[in-house]
Length: 287
Image 1: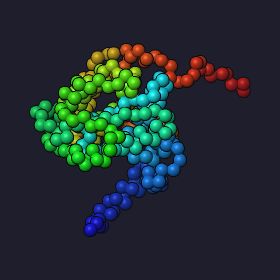
Image 2: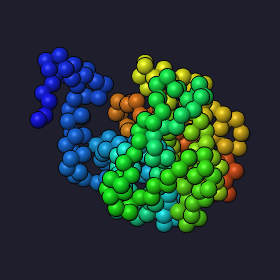
Image 3: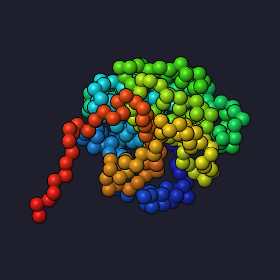
Image 4: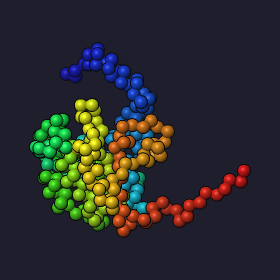
C-alpha cells in the first residue's frame, strides 16, 4: 500500500515547489518532457528536460568534440556505479546522442560492487560516509544493462591502473561519484592515460552538498582535484560555460557548479581547430 504523506510533509513539499529558484511551470514542463520526450534531444537537454541533465551535458559535449576531431566513437566512464541508476541513464543519453550526432559512445562503470571501502584517511569524510554504503546488486544490474555498458569490478586503484582504453574510442567524459578523497585520487589517474580527448568533460557529484556533509576545501573530491592540479601541464578547471551560454537565460542550478573540464595542454590535438571556422571576423557595423 502506498504511504500517504502527512499534513506537515505535504506543506513542506508545497513550500519547496513554490519557492524553488526554478519556476514551478518549468518543473512541470520538464517532468512532462522527461516522461514523453518530444522534440530534438539537444533542445530537451539544454532545457534541462532530460533525466540527469549533468550526465547528458558531459556526454553530448564530449561527443561533439570527438566528432569534430574525426572520431566515430568515444568512451564515457562512471566512477562509482552503486545501484546502477546512473549508468542506465547514461545508456539512454548515449542512444539519443548517437541518433543526433552519429557518434557511438562506449560506456564503462568502475565499482567494487561491495560498497564504500573502510579507510582511516580523515580527508575521506568518514563522519558522513559509512563503509559498505552503496553495495550493488550485480546480477540485477547486469540484467538491466543487457550488454549496453561494461562494469569493471575491483578496487579502483587497481582497475584504473590496468585500464588503457581504445585509440578508436578515446575517453571524453567521466562522471565522478566515488565520494572519498582516496578513491577519487586513485581514479584521477584515468586523466593521465594516452587514449583520451584533449579536453574531458567531468562531473563531480560530491564537491557541494548539505550542511551535514560539511564538504570543504582540503577534503573529499575537492582536495583530490587540488592535488591533481599541482602539475602545470594538466588542469581540471571549473566549467564557466554551461549556465551562461548553454542554458541561456535560465536560472542557475546547483549542478552547474559541479561540471569541470580537464585540459591536457600537452595533447597532440589540443590546438586542433574544432570550431568549423577557418577564420572568424566581426565586421564594423555600417550604421
